[in-house]
Length: 201
Image 1: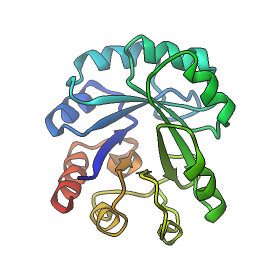
Image 2: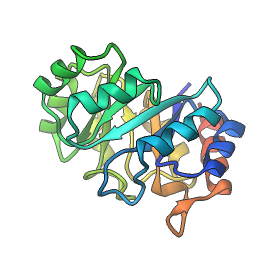
Image 3: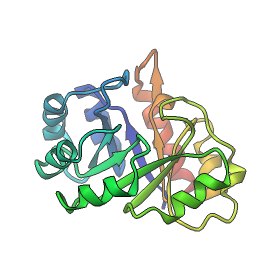
């Protein structure tokens, strides 16, 4: 069954809805330039309310390995998602500081990006359009024959995620802007997204 990640949660009501829906992952964005930014302190408070069966993912853009490892080892998050084009050396450095899993995001513009993604040493890879949170998807045809499990992101919403799952069979789907209304998470869209994935998986 395709796993589900609801990303960019910032409010207690978002967590409460996630607890009701039980996705596999929720995401906290620790990139200060993001409109979905949340401080580590606020994320920690939300994490305390999160159902323990749901994994918390921290999204980072060019943060220091020490900062990322601190949140992982401190229990604020379970996985780190690297969204700033971090190199293999960065992943290697992070692994000396923590044994927690790492997701490396890749911007898909063509076959060359997919070769990099296939060879990446991160535990998981995420395939996205642009820098994330754009609400646009890349050309899914690029994924024909791609043989590594991946998180699919970019332009997904309740209206098209079933088609994505049926066509591509990704390891997981990742959504942020697609479950928002006026820039905040929408409870009805969150539910519709999760139900659409589970209906087809």
